[in-house]
Image (cartoon, rainbow over all chains, first blue to last red; front, side, top):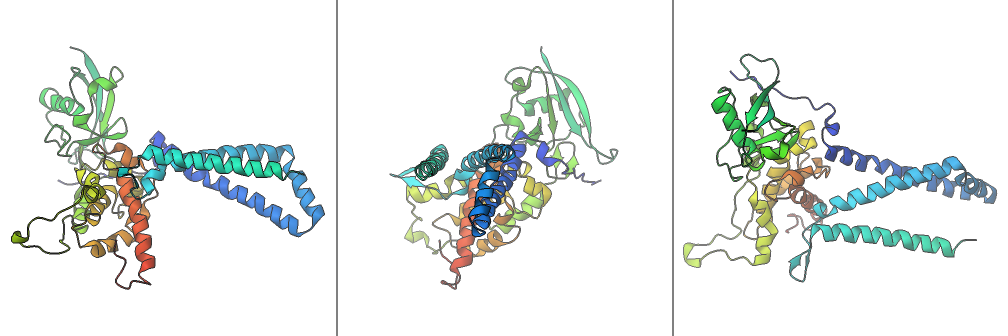
Length: 130
Length: 247
């Protein structure tokens, strides 16, 4: 007698730490979007004139804003690290000097490029400070 | 002889409404695999326990089960690594349970047929013309994907397949890629229809766990995601090359 039993998928993402980590990677995309909104509000306030823009800058210096920035920074670091970890799996095979480039090398190169871009941005911001 | 507690998920369609855990205190030695443990249970404790197995050396792909919630080959996992706490063995996740540790893999077999899992020669050659030659690089493009043993651990690691069994899934798409990436093959256009379809590569969300659990180093996530690039090229290049983009 056949009576196949189908198991439910409820709570599947809690079943394995690997899935929990995957869900965090996907969820931190919302933090990236949230920060884009913060920056867009800045552009919108700038269009309204000097006083509005200064108000926005002032709001950024408040402690709720600093806490928000720390949370968003942590989320973005997690987002970047988890995506660079999966990056080698998403790419066509790469060959350098006849040898296939190792997955770990691709991940490290991605992380190094992200770190370099962040440092370059910080350097530019430092040079442009009033 | 030392013993280890082992819990096995049982399901007998004739008498059980749903699966239940059966516990055994199994005598074992350090060189015993989980598969050997199941065989010992069947021999010495409960002859009604059903499970699939054949080669005992990670080649046939029959003995895939969930061990402590992770998809693994029973023959490639050792009881000693779960001592003294013990382990839980259940059928591969995301497949209907047929009986005990046996799952219904008919869905996968159907998908395997759909991907044309054989070489369709690009240019037919006669015996007199000799063999099809390939460079080491051409071999490297598909070799790892040809190591698949159809054990289906990757399907049990794929939540997208668990949520939607229309998804062609990691192993079938890796094998599809194995033939599409072969310089001797000429059926790429036909297979691309399946790659591009809704149940093709775009159902994958790059969880990546399929590649972690693969016992043969196939890296199915890489095969699937390379084909997202191929699928995107196929879509856009049809405007400039009406017959579709060649590789």
